Image (cartoon, rainbow, N blue to C red; front, side, top):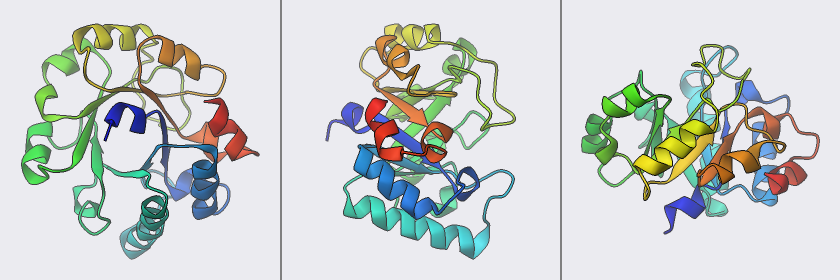
Length: 205
């Protein structure tokens, strides 16, 4: 499996990001050409407990049927029940070395937004980097300062062979800048989930 190409169009979503049925949104996004999906059920309005697990199982099944990589956002307890392909962790989550020790066969992604975070992170333990926030985003209320596409260029220089996914405020109008700067893929939330024509939006990314 070529991981870089599998991360090209990466939908991140939980029910709190959706104005209609998340299952329909995921199916339409797959029709449009997403290559990876991350289940991120957290923040205001998100599900908990059994409801979170039940929705996760349904989303997982859709991804499995369509051969789409399925990631969990940092909630390690969901990895095995949902048979996730991988885990995406942030700087405030469990250390990458520990996650790798727990899940040696899984794909692990790590968010980095500055040089200090890179220096303090176990980059050798991860399979790809999430770089951002590249642009302003409304999805995460506690988002870090915007880093711009220069951060992707810097990461690419430091890690020429590691897949890099840009995240944060990415839309159809700026995704090409992110790819040109050196990213292998773009992670998108609201530009897909709020689109009136999801398939067309994904094709444009």
